[in-house]
Length: 132
Ligand code: TYD
Image (cartoon, rainbow, N blue to C red; front, top):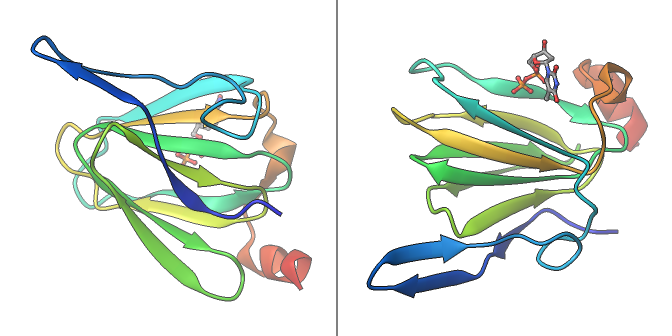
């Protein structure tokens, strides 16, 4: 099974600045069905607090910084994202919280599925039961 990991994205830099790129099924292991972004997060606020039954994601800090706390049912690991050429790959069935958003943080999320509220697991006890 695929594991949570930081994926280094190509960074094409020259005197004009940098350009990074993500192409379907090349830098990331899934077909992109949806893109959304999270921004204007008030200081101290957290996002996430759920897992997905099927959805895989890649999260990139396009601007600013934030932490993603991943819980696989056994242990928690915190990934600090603060560069736009690193993406955090999250497979299905991983509990995630996003916290410590800096001012002007912009989180880009690439998703393997269209939006479906039924794909969310919002109850932590249910998540733990599924992971057993
Ligand atoms: P939610 O998943 O709760 O955000 P987060 O995981 O960052 O805490 O989504 C917030 C709201 O946006 C909720 O009303 C559902 C809606 N939404 C969509 O309509 N489409 C989407 O693709 C996503 C991710 C959320």
